[in-house]
Length: 189
Image 1 (cartoon, one colour):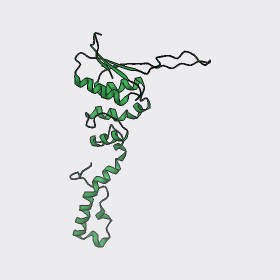
Image 2 (cartoon, rainbow, N blue to C red):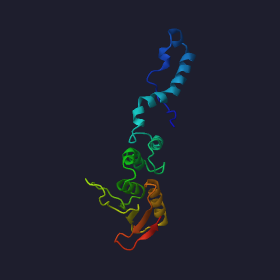
Image 3 (cartoon, helix red, strand yellow):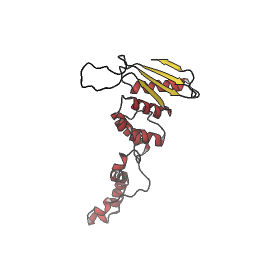
Image 4 (cartoon, rainbow, N blue to C red):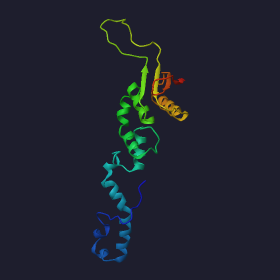
């Protein structure tokens, strides 16, 4: 991942640590100088190791590697700052994964569109048993987006995002609506 940097000096040249008999030897100084040239990038990397674990500061190839560590999702070669934001927010998104809010956020990250998520379930509390449960007994999920010009690429990307982030046992429907609220395109899945 990292490579040699031309002209990079080491903070502590090995030639200065040699005993006096070798310190005056030109060959010993050249050999230790070559070693210093090879090891200098290692020193620089270790001195700034903390920055490699911050998506805002890490080199682009390391951001992709971090994305794999935290299962950030999305294309590994995503655009610079956008990819950094996706990796930085991955752990927070994992905390709410499987919820309607998390699915809407994943759709927004993948397509740039706001999604309306309608789910069949609900929660309630009662001091007495046997109370009426909210929602439908059959699990279902409807994802609605509004876009002026829907295309097959958008629909395929949307379905891939939903498949990856919905609860596995819940069937879903995608509705692509025009911005003015006309008839939907899409269908059940």
